[in-house]
Length: 252
Image (cartoon, rainbow, N blue to C red; front, side, top):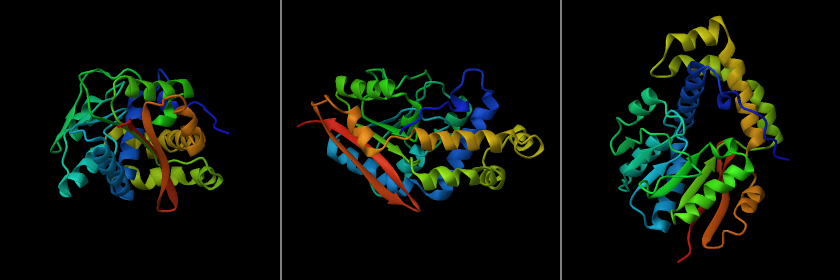
């Protein structure tokens, strides 16, 4: 059963420096795991199937994997302009991400349930759909349908017993990986080693992410009644786990 427990980074009043540290840690973890490889395959397929020439990443956080996915696609000869957006943009991190070729940032807040008409193109949500309660996740899909824009979601977390149990290793990963994050802030080192808040906070949010993640069956339920779109749902094996994805585009 999907449990929508709270994540610390989602709470109003959660210290911004801790939230930004969590985003930076996840971005570095994704780099080390080379998640751009399987995600580039999915994004390339979605662009080809939908026939659009632009790409809008929603809930980008501190940039997420989208810029590295875009770079991999460009190396394969499939370069498309990428715009990063977020409901609460992290200006410093997104500005750094936007230094990559073909990447820009929408500086104003963007709610994934009501994306402006001025941002057409393939919509992606990487590792963030689980942050939305079911009603909001449904609204994300409904907005894409209403504005006739293709949408691809992909989650690296998975609600399985092995994943939930392996979450206990997250504090160790934080201790090992945080010094390799760039740019690195002194406060993050303090809250990792001297006052070890970050290892525990990131562990909690990682555990809850697994518990929140939709199964393929639950994703299918979110699309019920949206019959103007063709929906494809699947899982790609990646390392010891799976990437669960959903792709929707207007019917021909």
